Image (cartoon, rainbow, N blue to C red; front, side, top):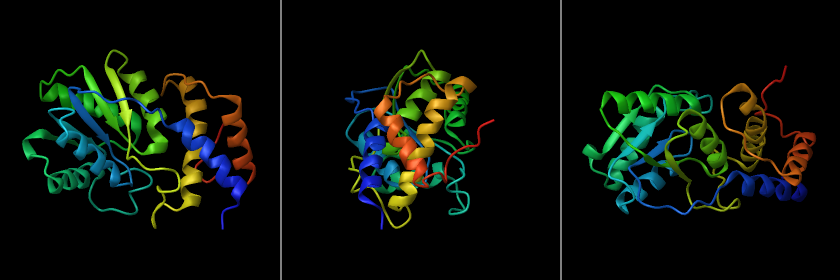
Amino acid sequence: MIHQEALALAKVLWNYHQLHHTLERSDCILVLGNLDTRTAERGADLYLQGYAPIIIFSGGLGKLTKDLWTGTEADLFARIALDRGVPPEAIFIENKSTNTGENILFTQQLLQEKNLHLNSFIVVQKPYMERRSYATFKKHWPDKKLLVTSPRLSFEEYPTNDITVEKLINMMVGDLQRIKLYPEKGFQVYQEIPDFVWDAYEKLVGMGYNKQLIKQD
C-alpha cells in the first residue's frame, strides 16, 4: 500500500512533468517508443483526427522494454497504428534508438534519407515524460516548432498491471533528476524546477523512491 503522503507528492511531480500544450496541425506526429502502448494509440488517434499527414514511430529497445519485448518499440507501435486504421504509406519507422536523445538524432537521419523537410512536430510520449521529451527535442532540434502531448489520463487512471503506482513514482522521480542534471551534460535545454516540486522530489527519494536515479559523480 502506497502511503497517502507519497501519492500527494507524486501528483506534484506528475503535474510538473506535463506541459498541457494546445495541439494544432503540424507536419508530422513523432511517437517516441516506451513500454506504454497507449502512447501509440494516442499518436494514431491524432493522425486519424487530421493533425498531421505522416506519423513516425521511433524506438528500438530501451532499458524498460529490452527484457519485456522481443520486437522493437517502433515496430510494435506501428502495428498498433495500422490496426487502428492508419494507412501504411503514412507510417515511417526508426527502430534503432535506445534513449530520447537517439530518438531525435536517428529521426533526423531518417528524414534526411527520405528527403523529408519538416518544420513542425507533435511529439507523443508518456504523460510523465512530456517535459523531458520537450527539453531533449529542443536541444537537438532547436529551430523546429514543437508541441508535446501524451495519453489523456489522470495520475489515478494511469497505472496498469505492468506500470504499478510504485514503478510510476520511481520513474517520475528519476525523470525529474534527469531534467535537473542533463542540461549540464548537454543532453537537454534547461527547464526551471520550482522549489515546491524539488521539495516533493527530495521527500520521495527519502521515502525510498530511488530505483530510477542515476549515479552522480
